[in-house]
Length: 398
Ligand SMILES: *Cc1c(COP(=O)(O)O)cnc(C)c1O
Image (cartoon, rainbow, N blue to C red; front, side, top):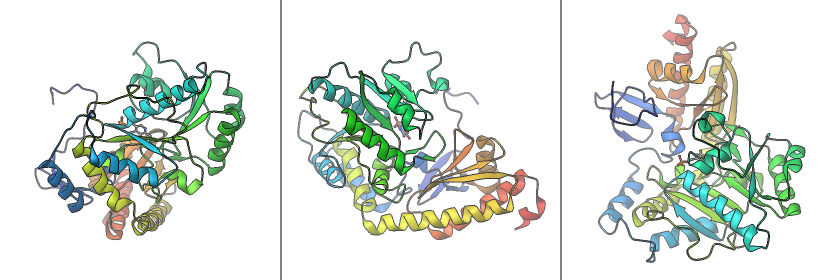
């Protein structure tokens, strides 16, 4: 099939026409159970009435307003997000990569404003993913993404995860900040230990560095906490959000303490579309739901159920399932076959959508509104797909 789209993606063949809850329906009427949720974007599933209503209401009022004017919804969203965590100020962007670009700029500018302009480098970690812009690609350090695009943007020093001695060793006179995903997503659902996060916090305090958490994938309730770092009780100086924040509408955010934001003066950063009235109306509606303690407790309970169901299926395929990892509703399953093959088997044999990640992890990221019944259906379909993969006809009958 030829297409006029730049051939950087290899989309699956289905053509989806609409979605509701955790389900996507093709133009032929085939229904798929979506446990990828647009890579953790559709936090409230598809067609959530509260979010659709917010979009429609705002759609009739104002879509875009330049940031040269006050945007009430953005002021409100910034207030709510900062009240819910360590931060004092927020900047809104259109994507995760842009939110991270802002975080990098804030960190560099902070050191500059504090009389340390020589400090501009940032320590990042193996397996990280921070986006596809030139700087965020360099921050991730993944050769696969960097190759062929000329010299990587300078200023990022890669360290192994969970090795505080290596990080301490990498800190130099030019180091400005440390940037990390509390739970790596693209890298293969790797939850960073609370102890390592604590050690990074201590090192930053001791050396006058800023700590940046990229919660673009793991934030907004995904782990069962509004922000993943809140479970670890380690606060950063800067945090980025995107994916789940707009529930499917593009928006990113960079939150910071007032101190970290020192140096960000009028004109030092900007965005044409960032935080426009339509985007923030939708994000405020998502937050209405995700922010409640009851909702987050449900995410934790359903995450536990999902893990138990996965473990039960895994026990039937001891030679196929190698590992189950992650937390909350951000789980990964590692099999004896490449992840794209597992995701394809799930799609073909189970009509279930999942997302492959590095390290042969198949990511399981259902919408946070998924029901217990849908979690059990997912487990049944996974069993069917793995049965087909290992050629076990007896299990297929179940
Ligand atoms: C997806 C992702 C990004 C990049 O977000 P885009 O909206 O694709 O630019 C950055 N960091 C993490 C952890 C992500 O999961």
